[in-house]
Length: 168
Ligand SMILES: Nc1ncnc2c1ncn2[C@@H]1O[C@H](COP(=O)(O)OP(=O)(O)OP(=O)(O)O)[C@@H](O)[C@H]1O
Ligand SMILES: NC(=O)c1ccc[n+]([C@@H]2O[C@H](COP(=O)(O)O)[C@@H](O)[C@H]2O)c1
Image (cartoon, rainbow, N blue to C red; front, side, top):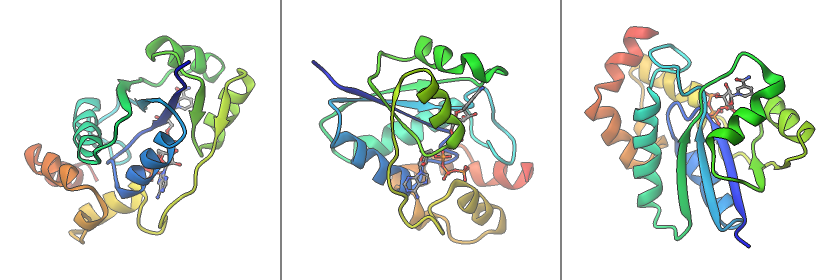
């Protein structure tokens, strides 16, 4: 039977740590659901990019990684009710067997719902962190080495740096 994993994060933006994460998970599963969380949010300091923009970043970056695994990208909006969030995620996603996250609330909600959760190692977390990369964009410091080339291209296409600076 096909084993399918779900990973959920905001990916604001998709960075090199996320690329490591995807490589790690696809060693484990036959198919991956890539959940874009807080999908309704954009144009804020914490969530500058729209769900569509994040889908482009993730899809193009994962495509360039040349992996065999089928990846489904699914946008998932927040819900102001943690107790039913897992059902909400399940209603938006292909069926999955394992959820991958290091977020304590996400781990708790899936575990309480009886879903197996696996945690994965963090790589070079000093720099490979969305908040750090967004800060570098605001300050005009080098952020490009820390994201896949495809993300640099998408951010250029959408004039993303100007937006991140404007909403900061
Ligand atoms: N450097 C990293 N190496 C490996 N996994 C990572 C790394 N950074 C984040 N992750 C994982 O990616 C998933 C999604 O994370 P998220 O989108 O919150 O990224 P983030 O870098 O923590 O962003 P932010 O600083 O905006 O919260 C989480 O499961 C997290 O554990
Ligand atoms: N009640 C809810 O809507 C709820 C609960 C837990 C996680 N989430 C979302 O899951 C995602 C988790 O990703 P991060 O690990 O990047 O924070 C976020 O988008 C977060 O908003 C939403």
